[in-house]
Length: 246
Image 1: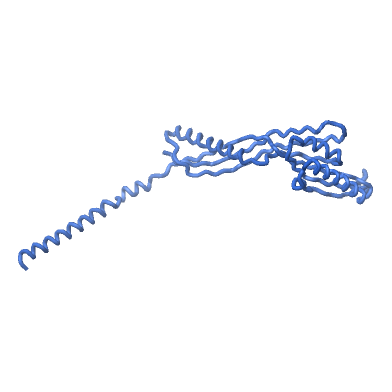
Image 2: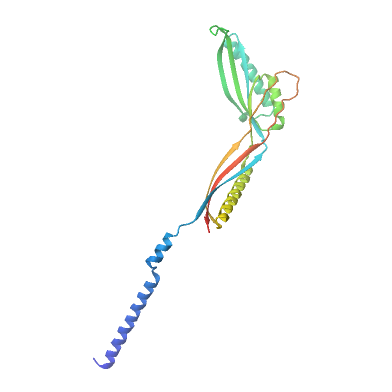
């Protein structure tokens, strides 16, 4: 092998050694040191979890009321016949007052004997037929109760008020709950010398607080319509929110 060949081989070996050195250098530079990796893993994510509440009120626009007929007679057949006649008249009046069939539902029916003061001798029979009525026009609710009594109803239970569509109120309550939670988180973070970062999670629960009103219907005729006061209904949204702390 002459001198030029020897020089060529030496140059090739030198070039290969340089490439290997560069690869090793790059690999060593890309890999974190064990100490740095442990330090990064040991740093915990700082978070804060708070509760928020939003409460809004709305005026009810519908009501449910238990309206019924109770009759007594010497025999069960007579009591039932009388009850059926009065109940039909009551239902006809409700339909004449524009109560839709879907808003009329029989919720109770019973026949049982009545006894004398000794509790051993049957003196007659009592029949009760109760209908749950959904009233969607509260402006005429008092007149409706008055007229069904005139038609034959003689038993009226409690009235429960509600709001047909609560979606807008729910959204308002949600916004108020989120604002409440954000304010609480900011206050706590500031007190700790930190700032609130991104939201990690949100969970929600909601409740309704209808205001039941007992209606005592006067059975006398020729009087003013039964006064009805729907009051207010509260919708409450409770949330839990978690944030990153910076």
